[in-house]
Image 1: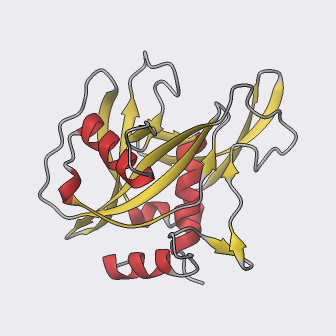
Image 2: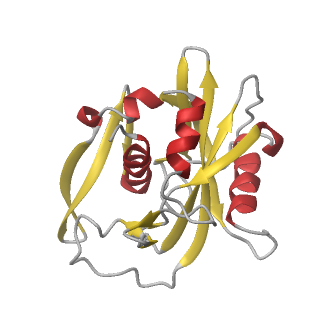
Image 3: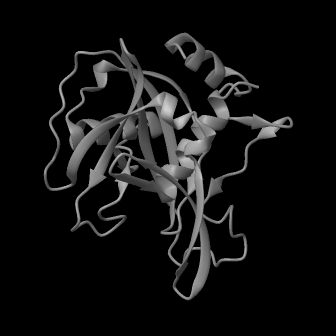
Length: 209
């Protein structure tokens, strides 16, 4: 897949604000409850957040930058995630928040990112409504992680994400309830939860029809 085809497929079916449209309407929010509609909604109020889905234009093929969150964080500790976080009052919009958080977490300057679209909003079980912003990144670019928040930064080939055989549906008991969730096991990385859900959404937007 080329950068041009990524941009074209993200643009297809989006409204003027870049949001995904299904059957003539803006898509409903996806989230952790999609696979288990009966589980309770988060107790705390919804908190708006934004993440960057950075697609790197490498000569050998497109890749996606992911991070491993530090173990001591209060939310999603030790999990694989996109760079991002809460939308603050001083952020102009979701794009500004995603670029700011990315620069703070992994040191990727915003001028290295060409924003090309967004995925469907995602509601996490912890109460965040996350807007994934997709950006193209052309090497070379600096990476300098915030060691307090980010334990590691790595890249996954986009071709791996676009292969349905790599999308594993698993289940486990959490809080006394059986839950279903997607996993994309890549090498020694365990990509699951909200990040896996957003990667599945990316696959849905980019796959061959």
